[in-house]
Image (cartoon, rainbow, N blue to C red; front, side, top):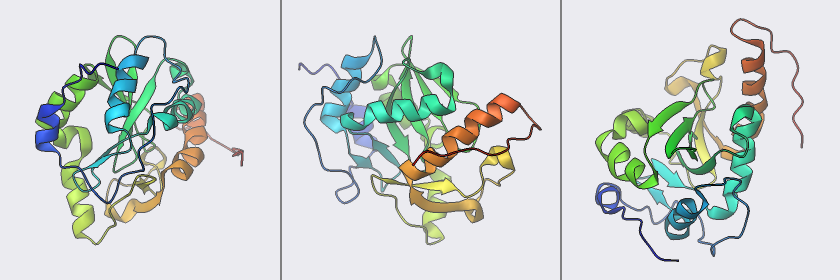
Length: 211
């Protein structure tokens, strides 16, 4: 595959973590469930998939994991099914996905609304993550977490909310914990879907989680 993806500004700003990433895998033929942007995501993750940056602040998914994360996000927000390619995540476990019309969406397990970030993957990395690092990744909050004695998350972990913000949790250190990211989202995604369904002030009730 020819390489048109230039992430020089991003790589000048973010140092690769030698001890927090995942084992590299070969380019996958897995269906990433997106019609228009598969090639750009494949190129990005073929080169950088599984890598961790800036002491665990930001990570890129392995290409093999994209389809499963697309399904997880669609569990929470059904309107995204077959329309996004999840390619990265931050220390809080917030997922970044490429959506139609070359827009990046940020999904958080703590809130019900996603954040729209204009641009393709290169623009996202070279501009949003460099110029707007704090807004995009909550860098200062992460430094506070680390200074409090919190652990650096490796590839499969994140620092998640014990009680989601949409259920009244506070956005501070006391409400954070290191947790397996797949478990975190598997539990939270159906709760998000139900909370969206019932609306503000509604009663969520019982939710079944498949093993």
